[in-house]
Image (cartoon, rainbow, N blue to C red):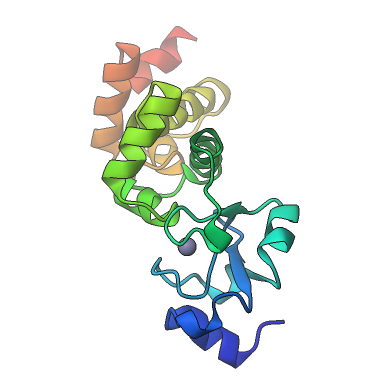
Length: 179
Ligand SMILES: [Zn+2]
């Protein structure tokens, strides 16, 4: 049960509550100890657990930063978690620092580990996911390119056009005309 006391413990990263409960963040599927120094989650995205085992049973993964109960998440699983977050949130103006913060690690650590596990950098993965979604919209909708750019996470349409050209060897408009 969430109480004011527990919420305060999370916001203040209060180590006195470690071991008493754990909290998972539904948007990332990661769970933490109250003392974790990761950014405070939104209250609506928090789920509480009485034990780390309960969190695992609910398919949450242990945080790499605070290592609840000393648990270490295998790198393969962690890379899979990053892929899931990219799939779920590429439409947002998600940047690498934001993604790293969500995954509770430094951007450098995320880049290095993800690349080692998948052969691709997180930036390349995010870009590829966005371009794939954009191609689908270009083929199947009549939406203006500018709007498609925004829908796949490029608030700046010119930037989208540049990334698209580099990935596909043609402009978004030319790609649409070839279909
Ligand atoms: Zn944590």
